[in-house]
Image (cartoon, rainbow, N blue to C red; front, side, top):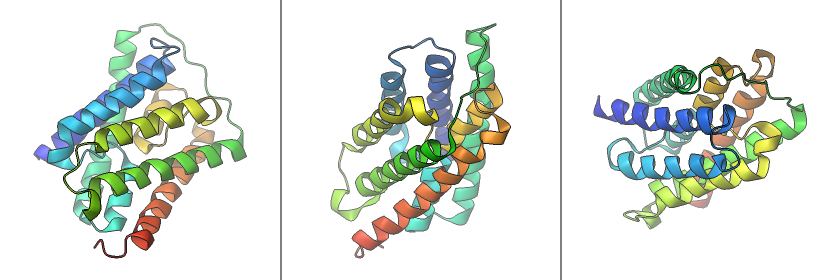
Length: 208
């Protein structure tokens, strides 16, 4: 239960920051720094309890890598998505009356952006937080948070810079992501997580 509570708290603050700072514009032009920073501090706060996934794609990668059970995967994803939805209501209460213009997404650039940086994020999580060679390090939160910061700055204007199905769920509920475009986020995010898991297993054959 405590792991699920940690996952809810971390995912909630991550998606709330994206919703307020980026979607509703309270943090412009510094939203990417806020997003990367909140992810970093929430990882440091909860990593020793739940693994600090805060992202269904990361949870999938960790499961495929062999470091979590199917039960944990399912329960983590449910809690993370619920946190993303809860963040929408709080964000709207914090910034009442703020309109949201849907993202104007182009299929190929969006698919590539979300695939590459979801892969990068899952790869960094697996390599810094689950690998034997980096066991006990205290820098994984910084590495993971800065991966999201880099992605948000690099392709945020192309795809929305989600790299996280919980964030995409928040974008969908708040009206930033059109229902007809949601596959442009969810599909590459899942693929990025799968590719990262198997890339890690290929490059770390001793890590079981």
